Image (cartoon, rainbow, N blue to C red):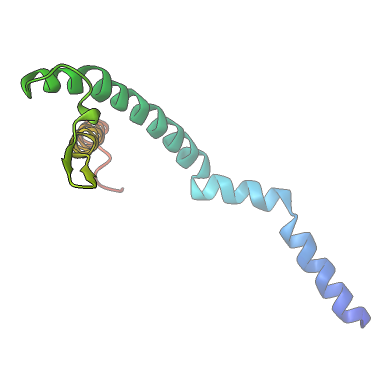
Length: 114
């Protein structure tokens, strides 16, 4: 390998391992804010899932005619088992999460980027 090629490889290596440049990238691109949002989104998702699974679904199960977990309801057609209760519970979970996100966006007024 020629000396020039080795020098180029070292220069590229220096740029790739430049910690200052990496920290600038994190600051400029808002990576920390993204990480915080991701962590909070996971926590809100768990909270909403618990609300839906522990409170909404049992109440809905009572109105559907049987107390119990909504996710357990199914329809058996021959060898196929259609898990309509699980689908309904997941759809409710999605709607509640979407509503919470909508409310947070409206309250925090972040719907338009400045």
